[in-house]
View 1 (cartoon, one colour):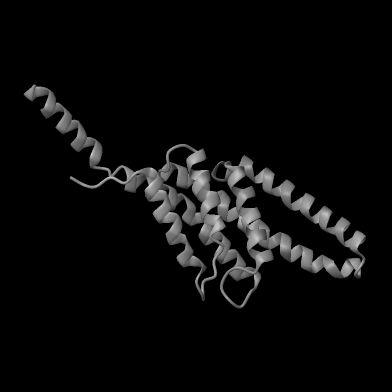
View 2 (cartoon, rainbow, N blue to C red; view 1 turned 180 degrees about the vertical axis):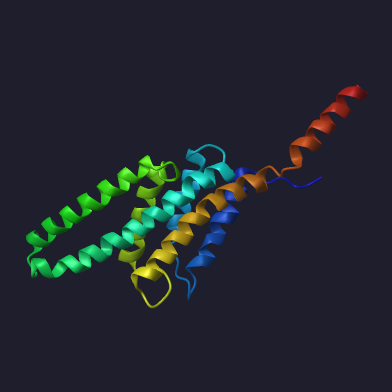
Length: 183
């Protein structure tokens, strides 16, 4: 019979293992794992269907993050150092980018738009915090954020799999049936 871990213990073990991603040279933003670990449970029990709902919009959200940062960089000279003008230009850029991102939710594969928004936020935090592989650039920030976000559903699945191995329910049912027939 296989040992079944309490959920609290399996989650604790997996959470501790995420710290390995923070070691050099990776320096990955593990908060992305935790955000999408929780998101997998928000969609119900973590399974392949949930992954299919989360991963495409997640990748889309981090791509839109790259686009936003690049547009901010290109638009910066327009403001000429004026903070108010720079903020207004960035507001227009963010309005356009977020509007297009929300419109993407009309495409079935991206319909879980909350995942795209969370991934966008993880990308921004990754870039702002300087996480990811060196040299620090938009591609490496994107890689770090996207990988961590996409690992979240795997950690959610693993936390449940360690708690309830696939064979456990069948074994328990057989033991219960045998126990009933002997009484």
